Image (cartoon, rainbow, N blue to C red; front, side, top):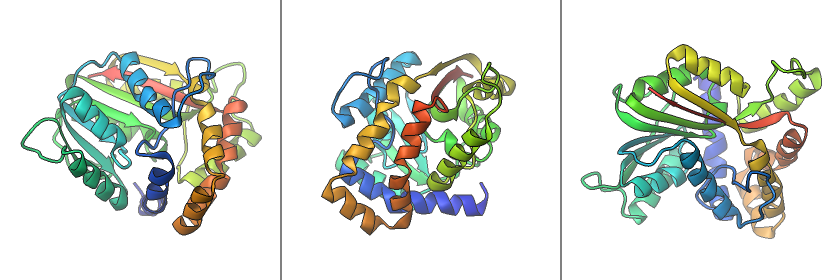
Length: 287
């Protein structure tokens, strides 16, 4: 990654992660609200259900060596390690996130590398990891692809790290397909996306068909994709509602300007889903 983008992402998550945990808990990703998006449920339960639904959709029933790319404060990493009785590594650009995730692993008695399950966390650039090739049988990417400045290099790195027969399972923010009747993105749509990029430190997003084409070109096998935009869209309204309480407002002020900007941009995300511009894309593939 470029040093400036690296620093922007690091600062954003260094300043906002502890606030997010305070208000929302350990899972820093969308929730699942049923195929139609109309199931009302407790917000943390919706986030856990998204993990389980994604695993079921990808037909992942076992794993022994897991890499969680963009692990946040370790929500998915610890969950997957316990679920599969596996060794899991979570990577992030944020030292604050890695430190907090490690503390959570210790508290959960999952930090002992001599036994299973266990989990460890490192500050690592996902485009240039220190791991050996063919090391992991499950690579999990929950809403981290949008941060990658080179989508092909990201998928290429995951392919190299994956064991033969292993599974790559990704959920990521996308924009709508441009190969349909709707045609290329309009100037208004591009401006909407650029406003989101600026706030959330994103280089750009691509469409799900583009991700699929990249995966095919790299050599992934058994590629399947799905659009779960409707199922997760209520998430942003839930976040906006939770941000109205005094605790959240006080936390935003303490977290500083990047977190405050992120709160102001919640409406951009909600409107993006309503207009069909933003999409929640899933991709599963094997090596």
